[in-house]
Image (cartoon, rainbow, N blue to C red; front, top):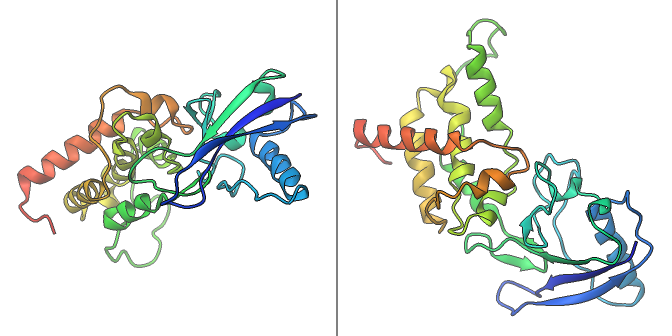
Length: 251
């Protein structure tokens, strides 16, 4: 298979970027999208040119590092999968493929396709944890948790923090991500002591990072590779408003 790639090249955060075209030949249909980029970088090295910078790690759809726009869609045309799980058989021979980084003020471009998504880390640091002392690990059945709570919590915890929700939203909102982080604790007994402060602190940090307001279009859930539900945004709103009404402590 042969492809024309139009890839965003940008030297650093302050530099002006542009799309640069590359031709690739003899790409196999079973090659993953990131393996295809590896082939391109191999050719660039042989020609004495600078490689294309892109983020990756596990390449199994777990870590969320491989965050790319492919032909205008976060993670490409395959629904419910990260771009590292996308294979070249999803395209046709001779296609032109446009590859760009996430576009959000809170995710500045570091170089080429690599963006700084540490804003997510700071949101988690603001409240996405349990700090109370619980002693040693309890017996598995010591604290009963209803099945529907277990499943709802695990569905929220499936978020891989890739940022596709932000990239898909016209307002660059992080509500789905923050909603998933709040939901994974809000329904569990271990998360109750800090429940009120958690929602307030994480929302405050989200706003401080420069993410936009929810656009109410649902694009975030459609493009989420982990299929995180919009219900988590509803739960975040309920947790936050409830915390504001019942507590004046926003520290």
